[in-house]
Amino acid sequence: MKKKLALFVTGGTVYPAMEILCRGKTDFSMALAGGTCLCLIDRVCNGKLKAKPLSIKCFAGSVIITAVEFGIGLLVNRVLKLDVWDYSSMPLNILGQICVPFSMLWYALTAPALALCAWYDKIMKG
Image (cartoon, rainbow, N blue to C red):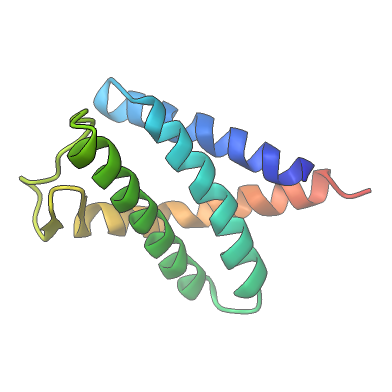
């Protein structure tokens, strides 16, 4: 339970921080997305897919992040009309909520996320 909380807090801090660095702003929903994504990446990629190659884990991580982003995007951008982000101008987007270029970025960022999850495994043993 401590590890899950640590992962959620870390993802909920790192994801919005990355967004501030890249876009100059963020939204509270990005903290929820980041925490959820890191917990799911740990569970799926470092759990169920542990013996699989890194490429498979990164693909799964990209799918996880893209799916979480789509779900939260539908809620905050479409239902609540908060206009947190809009990928409509990006190629291969779906409803302006997700797009292939960012899914490719999530693929690359899954590797350090996996390393972070493994680091938490090491420090939280005992």
